[in-house]
Image (tube, rainbow, N blue to C red; front, side, top):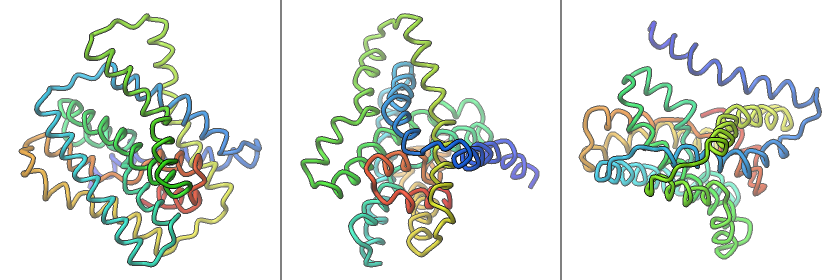
Amino acid sequence: MHQLLALFLTVLTPVFLVVAVGYLAAPRLQIEARTMSKVSYYILAPAFVFNIFSDASIQGYLALRMAAFNIAVTTGCVLVAMLAARLMGRPGPIVAAFVLVAAFGNAANFGLPIIQFKLGEEALVPASVYFLVLNVYGFVVGVTAAAWNRGGALDAIRSLVKTPAILAVIPAISVNWLNLEIPLSLERGVGLLAVALIPLMLLTLGMQLATMGRPNLNASVTVASMVRIVVGPALAFALAALFGLTGIDRGAGIIQASMPSAVFAVLIALEYALVPSFVTTTVLVS
């Protein structure tokens, strides 16, 4: 019980405090969540991805198994979310939103601290691998779903290949694999932008909540939230042995699969006008 209380106070409470600051600041300072989300989506997110990927230390075969496990679990969540939305008779935009929130788990500001707290410092290496895969795959699936709903397959493909965070993966991996040295001034500049992403995303979440008024807690929000926090860990428990994961690699993978929906989903929903009020409420509830 003491550990659970400490986890809430040291990991979760600061996150909700930042969201609350955004909620209180938006109407008083007349700041639009849309403007903040564009800064995060087009500037900070690619810097964040580049900063992580360009310096990541990943062991080949194990990383491939961990990536495959992660993709399998997330794909399972996406399929369950899509099926649930269809069975509930929800329209296309809501179905796409179900997919979006299922594809993006909060592996960063929730997942990494919880894993460090529970499994120790050595677990941060596999946790980071899961985090990298979850972010790239989440952007691929989330942007595709949002753009497909708006304009069909061609628009989805065009939007996907133009997504800043995905484009940043290519130079980042090139720097990593070729062991290239980045000029110190550039490295520090990108690093400053990268560390600004998570707090700005949380502020944006709070501002979006302030603009939409009282959250509409309905059956769709409940079911979409449950896909992330129930189906995700259930699939992770079931599939870990299939991919040969044991010890802290298994533990870190299950914890990351159990995370709620990420604020990244809100950024994509705002950028593509994909029922942002529903996505924002689901992210908060989960």
